[in-house]
Every structure is written in C-alpha cells, then in structure tokens.
Length: 200
Image (cartoon, rainbow, N blue to C red; front, top):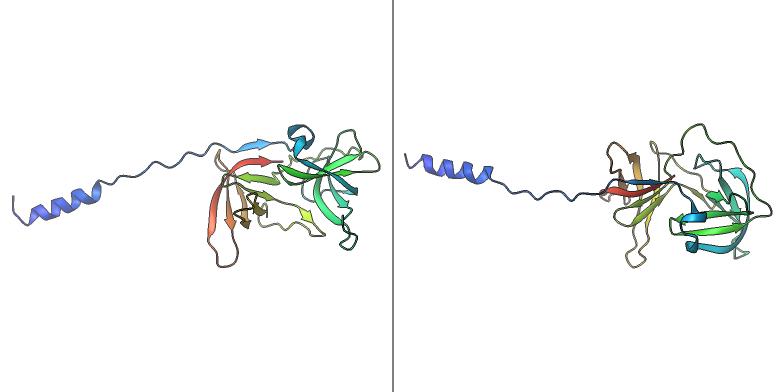
C-alpha cells in the first residue's frame, strides 16, 4: 500500500467512530385537574377574607373566579387574584400561588354554580422538571398577557436558588413530554425545559 494513502485511511477511521451518550429520558407530562380541596389541603394558608364576583379571565372552569382579597396591611389595600377555585359547598375559595401554596379565602356565602365551559380548560399552571413553577394569572390588578397560546410567569420554589422567567410561545404539546421555552430576560439565553405536571 502506498505510504501516502495510509494517513488518509487513519483520518477517515478516526472521524467516523464517534461515541455519543444516550439522551436522558424524561417521563411523559402528567396532566391533572387542580383540586386543592382534596389533593393537598395541608398546603393552604388560612385567614384571608375577600369577594369573588367575577368569572376568571385565566381559566375556563365553571368553579374559577377572579377574587379581591382583603390586605393584611390597610395601607396596601386589597389585591386581585385570578384564578381562585370555589369550594363545592362551603363559603370559601382557594387562590394558588403554586401547586403547594395557596390562600384560602373566607366568603360571605357559597359561590353560585356556573355553566361548564364549551371548550376544555387549558393548562394554566405548570411544574417544570427543573423545579420551577409557572402560572398564568392576574395579580394586584394585572391582566394576563397572551403570547401565542399562553404567557406564563415562572419562579423557583427554592428560595436558596431564586430564578424566574417568562414562557415564550406557549406550551409545546406535540410529544408525550410537553416542553416550554423559558426566557430569563432581555439578552439572556432561552432555556428549553420539560413540563413535569400541567394543571388545568
């Protein structure tokens, strides 16, 4: 074999044998109906009074409301929270900050029963595989912004490692494991994160 051909063969051999690590398998996204009265009642915070007289602008559920919560500090005043989920029989509603933390609101009377929506409720709260929680809601007089299907604000539940961002372009549900693109702010990288649990 000519000596000039041998280096070329060695080069081809080295460039074609490449080891690649298998991608980490992420379980399919779990879709849950948000049911705070039965799933995790110990996580609620009790003691806020309020008024719920407007259907939710965020969630297409017949038991979802926009509520005005009385502030603990009179100087701050009341706050709006959307969504809040009515108790099926008692004069109360729960207003979630995350799947594990919410305010239980005492009301003057049980909320009326509304007709169910025509379309199925869209996911409005997510728990991501990186531990962050994303919610679509109106808080303190704000209104939800739509960027495609959803715009959600995300935050870390680990107070030792705070982080946050905004979901861009909605939820990608083309595969069993849903994903979102999470923007950390102007000039920052956009993270592609899988959704562990979606609540609707």
